[in-house]
Length: 222
Image 1: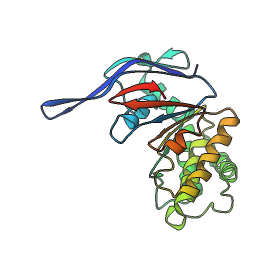
Image 2: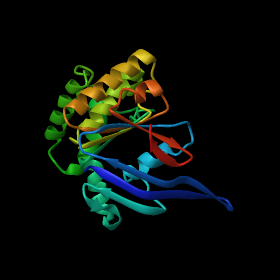
Image 3: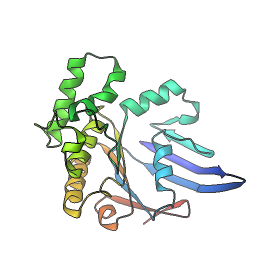
């Protein structure tokens, strides 16, 4: 088992009002699965991904990651998991505009305290892996949206993660480029990486091996 959410609730205070975002979410994802979570905007999909990726914490409920209850994790351990086990891909790429493609990929590797040459070697390998060899010194503004997303995926792969979390990874792309990105995720999953994609697009969700639907803060198998 890769992860399991048990009766997860998440709420936020909005002035004097308490907004319930997740209402008793239950989800199990096994290692090697390719899962999509589909739902309309504002239904809680991104909040769910943030909790799975340790970017946020639930108000209540239990989260088990690789067989361990995460409530007991210390901050340092959570940082290590985010840096070494989980790769993040977002709709808006989140690349630093002043850095080259190579530098953007190397950035999360800096926290591993390994030689700069090692980081650069890894970055070049994953750039080649996503079809971006030769674009090492290009900055994000010099690349198309699809190329930027490939750089973002390469950055996620640099840590050799066991899990990739992708939040609307094709949402800012045209349909052809979006399909190319989806094909890359499918290939990575065939190599054994667990992939969880957040999307509102039925065509994207339908290519995943398993689809769950989020509505009103709860999940059900589609």
